[in-house]
Structures are given as C-alpha cells and as structure tokens.
Image (tube, rainbow, N blue to C red):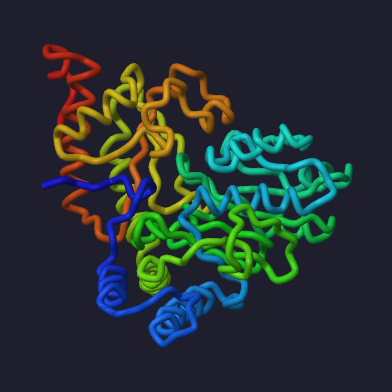
Length: 386
C-alpha cells in the first residue's frame, strides 16, 4: 500500500471527472468550431463545461478561458496583460511559482521591469507596501499567488485587491494551489489561473478567468477559439472532466478543509519531537489546511523523499516543477532560511481521501527513516520509534 501525501503536485483523478471524460469520449462528435451537427454537439458539451465552471466560481461563462494548465494560464495572463499595457513595470513577490517568475524574465527583453514586493517571515505581503509601490506609477500588472505551493501561506487577497482597485491597477492571482482547498472569491481579481489536476481533474487542462473589460493580448494566435484569447481546437473531454472535478471538489470543501487540517496536525504531532525538526508552514487560517513543510536537520530533503518512496510514502521537496533542481527552494530562501536548511525540507500535502490510519502509518515510517538516516544504528535506540 502506498500512502499518497503529494496532493500539491497533483491530486488523484476524481471519479466524477473520469465519468465525465468517458462520457465525452463515447460521444460521436466533431470539431467544436464546425457548423455541422457533430461539430455543434461538441460545441454544446464545451459550453456546458464552461457554464459549470462559471457557476462554480460565481462568474460569467464569457469570462472563462480553457487552457492546458497553470503554466499556460500564468504565461498568458502575465505576458498578455503586460503587452496590452503602455506601462512597463510588473509587480510580484519573490515566492511565486516559476511559471510566474520566468515569464517576467522574458518581459525584460521587451523593456519591462519587475518589482519584487517584500514578504514577511511567514511569506505574506504587506498591503501598505503594495499601495506605496503602486502610487509610484507605471505598474502594468500586479501578480500575487493566492496560496504558496511549498509553505501553504495564503495572501490577504481582499486587502490586496482593495489596494489595486484603489490605484486602478489590474490584479492577477495564481490560484493553482488555492482553488479547491480554501474558499476563493474570484471577484477579487481581474485575472485568475487554475489547474484542473490540482483539484482532481485531468492533467493538461486549466482555467483562466479574464474579467470582462480586462485588456489581454493573446499569445496563441490562429483561430478565434476561446473568445480569440487562446487559438487552437479545444479539448472537450478535458474541459468536461475539469468542470466535473471542480463542482465535486467545491461541493465538499466545507468538510474537506477541517478533515485535512486535522490530519495535517496529526502528522505534525507525530514528527514534532524528532531531532532537529523545523516546521515551515503554519497551523492558522493563513495557511492551506492540507500543507505541511518540515525541515529535518542534517538530512537532505531529496534523499529523504527517495527513502520514503521506497517505504511507500509519497512526498516531495517542494514544487514538482522544480524536482531535481540543484538549487534549494527559492521560496524558503526568500523567507530568510539559509541554503543548507532550505535543502532539508520535505513537503507533505494531504487530500480528502487520506485517513487517520494512513497518517499514523506515515508517521511510523517517517520517524523510522529519519532516525536511521540522522542517528545511525546504536544511537537510534535512544529515540522511541512509534
């Protein structure tokens, strides 16, 4: 039996999504842009999926663009908003996902500058600093992630939104880790990115919310699909799976949040007395209820993850997109963690299907492996392995 504690990398495909996709695949259909009967059948399924997503997010169907996932959504939102503006500064934070930070490097070649807001030791942005930055002018876009994928810290989006509205600057949020794990009020932002596989939909499918009236230059050019914002024939089965997963996930959110939080704290309590252990994610409402980032002193995170995998526990050292990178987590470095300690962190991320029995078994395995790696044979007996 494998114990899956890596939901921030990808969540298991939900049965609702599988059924919706199989139903779409079983239908004889054409290209959604074709005008004949089979094409219009596909169009009807696509627009039904769009309507379901819009209803779940309390927005208009015309504000939903289907994408291939978080990376495409972030790139489209950031580059598209920048290229549509006459201003030349993008405001963000140093703890964003690489799919936010790397497009900004490309924009530098087009004469744009990046302003990095400071974050506190917990990773949160100060709305007053954002206000002072925007008052300086020339900011084309603010891009701040709703929740961090490594530490789980959540930003004060209502306050940040109020500042951006006050200063007349569009706000984009990478909500890939937030949507489906905490309540997300899409109306607070002008652009929002989500990825289907994080809430139990298919990989390779995503959502980009574009508030009506928001200027956005399309990056994929060709046909007029997705309101002219994303050329290319739409993936109808993936859109159907995405919509079904989102509806199911949000429908159980009020039960899933306390469930995951309880299991997260159960996991931490089982590890807290290990030698050199440090917790980098909090237990308050300012953090995702399912995320626990822990540093195990003296043990490289990647080596520990590999050993845990051999014992049947799936975890990660941080973003799955950065797995295998030679550098420690840029998120932890930005929070003031030194390079050695930043390389010793393991992220456990839970889902609604995890059980207390799984957590107890994971605690037993993690303790056993950590003590073996940290202390060695004789000294291991000084510690009680549960």
